[in-house]
Length: 456
Ligand SMILES: [Zn+2]
Image (cartoon, rainbow, N blue to C red; front, top):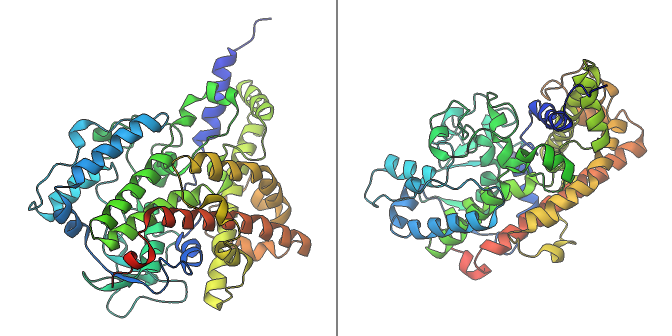
């Protein structure tokens, strides 16, 4: 009997259907919680403040020097980032320093191909339990293009004045959350947003192009260690851009420091740190943790034959586990901050410098060869642990659609036996240890030495 459908088509559909429903692109919720403990004791950071500077102010002063550094960056990306979509030459930064603030900003966001409508305001994010100073509160649209703050507590967002001294730790931590405010949203041509037609990123390689925040997924995920057969069936899985983003923002950070703009040196460093931390999240480094390729293929075959249950169950399970992990991390760390429990294992792991010697300074291949590889190595174990730590309805029941808002998975995890609670905390702390190590590796790679960084 003839096979009812060609194998290759089957494989393509396998990957396509698995990805059609990967909605969560946040990785860790609220990256500031990861960044503060990671950097607070670094000599480049502790005790230092820098004067806040608007983006327009930075661009006006550096309009003559930026074209060269951005052009070199573009050439580096074309030569070194696999599957990189070259930036159209017409988007190269080329405006005079006396152009108005809006023109400077537009030229810059086009040159680095981020969403044109993100305000890129002067602000800082305060820790849980600390509200913005009176009269310095901010509206959400002044910060983000997203409809809702989601995991951000607006009370913690504080407006800064130009020239005001800001602790370096706050600049880096605040900036490390900023790529989740919409910088990478709507950049593909099928996202229905204006810059999508300009940027030449093509159609969105995976995920639902019409979902609001879903379109940032290819910038915040990197699948570098999947099986050859999966890449063959779904080559678009390789069209991801965290390496390009990290290198670009580290380059801009070094440039800003060298040109005498320490605020922007730290803020760009924070932007790079976001993507490095994302890579510590196994659901951002593996397509389907806990599912082997043969199982994916068999599930796909069943689906093609009209038996859809196993496919839907697999999709739902990976989505719910991804969300559960982030929900647990956010709630556990928020509680620790509010109660001042800085010895919490997750926060302690972020401060743990024991592994720093293995990644002293982040290199262009660190994200792929070290950070992603280590996340991939523990993905299956963590996936299995989630199943043992949370009530089945959240991580195994195909009928549940966990959106992460109406449940506190940290609270629920405490219903599990103590041994399972400890194992989960260990595995998530291990992810935080990696995030902390790589955060510091970015800072050592970009910041001037301690004395030069201290510009007060
Ligand atoms: Zn992210």
